[in-house]
Structures are given as structure tokens and as C-alpha cells.
Image (cartoon, rainbow, N blue to C red; front, side, top):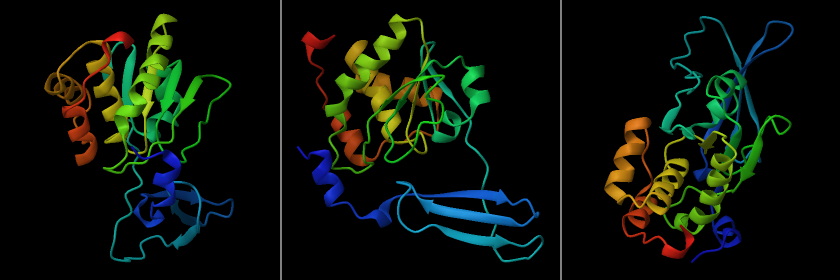
Amino acid sequence: MHSLAQEIQCFSKNRLKKQSTRVTTVTGKKLLESRSEDGEGEEHVDELEEGSGCGFVVDDSLDLQVGVVRPFLLLASQDAAHDIDTLQKYKVSHVLNVAYGIINLFPDQLVYKTLQILDLPETDVTSYLEECSSFIDQARGQDGVVLVHCNAGVSRSSSIVIGYLMLKEELSFDDAYSQVKLARPSIRPNPGFYHQLQIYKPHKCFK
């Protein structure tokens, strides 16, 4: 089992996803800021020209689709977690952030728990399930609504939600995966997470 420190040490930052933000300055100049997912490293800024015909289209659309897995359990990307209108629409009270290096924007309004999980096949995602499940159940016990997110809402967060259903509701992997995919069709745990969850045996004493 790798510790988080070991995973980070052997992790190449060029494998992190990039984030891009379109910015319009007070003078009307349009810029595109790019940085790695962990928020560290070099920041790159490109000036955008209207109708410049530069040969590519920047996809700066937000992914605000929220998967309702249970009335108290939601799954989404960081875009939804950073959009206050979406959070209020779904009556989110708690946020479980399992991304690496993604900040929590509304600490005065929501209850956060952050676990920095690397989206690598060798990361032991099942080792986080009990702690995450405790937080989800804590929110549920307070009649709250938990939004679970990572960066894209595709691999890490979906794996945590699938594991929660297996651990707390005793669903099989196939049933849990199907229900989560129905709620958010874009999910795709990385191959390592997928295999770990397939063979995951929840501890009976924890339920």
C-alpha cells in the first residue's frame, strides 16, 4: 500500500490535468490562463484575439451537471462545487473534496472535508472509503446534502460514491456502478480504481 507522500514523491506533475480560465481584463483584453490541476508550477497566459482564426477552439464551458445518487448524496465536477447557484439549487450543505490541489471556495457557508487523492491506478482508493463514508453519514444524520467532487467528477469522486454504496448499502460492485453511472453518465473510474472496487470487501463491523 502506498502512502500519499510516496505517491506524490513518484508522481510526475506533467500527468496532472490542466485548468484553463478565460479572463476579460478591465481594458477589455481577453486572456486565457492555464495552470496544472495542483495549482502549482508555471502559470501560462495567452492573449485571445477576437476572430483571430488561430486554428483551434477553446472549450471553456462549465460542467455543472450534478448526479443525484441519493437525495442526500450528489456527484459532480469541481465546476459545480465552485458554482454557488448550483450548490444552492441542490441544497448542498456538505462538500467532500477528493481532488488534489483544488481549493474550497465557500468555507463560511458549507461544511468541507478534503482528502487529496491522486487519480493514479496505483493509488489505494479503497483505503479512503471508511473516512469518506463517515463524513457522508454525518451529513445525512444532520439532514444535510453532500456533494462529492474531484476535478472532472469522473474517476476519483465516482469511485468514492460507488464504494460508499457498497460499504453502507451492501450493494454489489455492478449494482453500485450502474446506479452511479445512471446518475452521472460521464463517470469512468481509472482501471486501477475499477479493479480495486470489483474486489472490495467492506468490513462488516464498520457498517
